[in-house]
Length: 352
Image 1 (tube, helix red, strand yellow):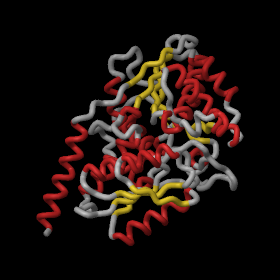
Image 2 (cartoon, rainbow, N blue to C red; image 1 turned 90 degrees about the vertical axis):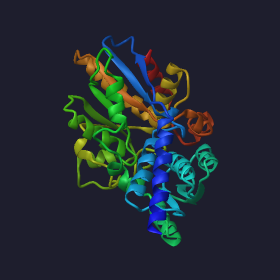
Image 3 (cartoon, helix red, strand yellow; image 1 turned 45 degrees about the vertical axis):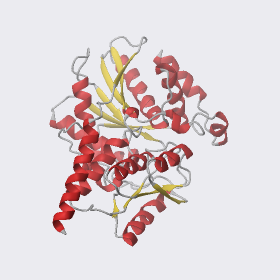
């Protein structure tokens, strides 16, 4: 029986690695900034993964972590608590190795993400709020004798931050022949905290002078906790409408010590910057990319004011096609009270 399980696990790892070998690295898009000579913006385009987002890397790492720790076997039900994009990718990899997957998601998750989860073979279990996801996912996994993948706990340890083609290594390799090959800043968001942990650790491991900035929704706890470690929750009533980033609690994978700076971004500013960069590069991007861009433009202005030149790299997290009924719907934005146009105009001015 043990030999059969080992053989199954070996085949599962082979299938995941074969899938990786069929995939090219994601593109690094160069965005010139005519108003800021000597400063260049780059977008690491994670939307081109087979499942359409940055979370493809995380899902692969989480499932390999479960396999190599012998926590996943033939017939294991995989369950995770997620706002959507991670679940799409986890459903993809679960199907690849012949397992069932259930995503525990808030009812507010965009319809396009729910459709994508189901397209890749996953099931959906909805809860009323983000805080209900964790106990519900843990309970579902326990009842079925399955595995709660728990992205919020394992994201920072499932990824090999020293290299192995993680996103940080890929960025520095792709920047090698640019005008300013070592970025002055790398900007990312935080949902689990896994990406910022990987980037921050890799920067220190490579002894780069690059600084890491995390762009965080205004309603999130992460930037508050970074400023004051005693803060573990946002004020009552604080909320975030940007899917995939920002949390109401400090997640176990969030490592504030490797982050040089955090910038709190209003949701309306995220939408404005999202619309502006989408127009600039000629295709729609998601809301979390807008959060990143708003922070990048603030850093660009600061660098220019200080007479600095260099490169800033950020992440294009996913496609805006998933948000046609929300972030790209003016009536929906108005109903949410998001007055984004002024932010959009400023971002457009800075980008062109």
